[in-house]
Each structure stands twice: as structure tokens, then as C-alpha cells.
Length: 118
Ligand SMILES: [Zn+2]
Image (cartoon, rainbow, N blue to C red; front, side):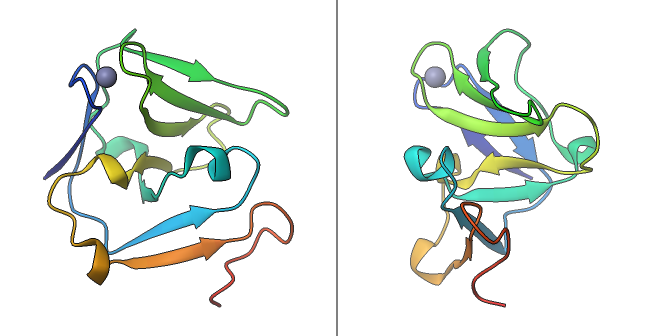
């Protein structure tokens, strides 16, 4: 079990395992957030208290990006239409990650929608 917590501690998520790799994406929102995403099945994630986050939804309304209502830290995103059986937690919020040893995958969400390391 690993926990991700925002800065003030109002928002906490839990996942069964620490990520073995994280994704950095260059799309319009991810490059602004500078998040490093760890993917999980929604059914295996412990979500924060309802109302503790503020969702940000735009464009084709596929995803909701959540941030803490108090400290503003971006915590996770979730699929809105249920088409994706995955969600992402911002791994920067997890304590104890060995960042120099972590595999960081570059996803080209801005253009080709593929991983640049494949
Ligand atoms: Zn907070």
C-alpha cells in the first residue's frame, strides 16, 4: 500500500503498490501541471473524501483533473465516461519514491499520442 497526499493533507489517495514507472506527458494540461502520473485501475484505488477536491474538466470532457480545494495541489485524474479502466495518481505526492532510480516514460500527448521511448 502506498499513499499520495496533497501538501495540506486534506486529500489522500491509496494504491496497492508503488509505481514501477511513471509518465510525463507534454499535452497542454500535463505540461502545465508538471505531474508524474502513476496509473492504476480505479477499483484498486482508495479515493479522497468526496468534496475535498475540485475537478477541472474541459474540451471533450473525457477526464477530470482533481486538485485539493485547500492547497491547490493536483492529486489525480479520473475518466468521466468510464471508457478507460484506469486512472492516474500524481506520483509526486507519494513519499519515499526513489526518483533517480524511477523509470520516467515520456508520452507525446501533444501530438502523436504515443510513448517516445517505444
Ligand atoms: Zn491540500
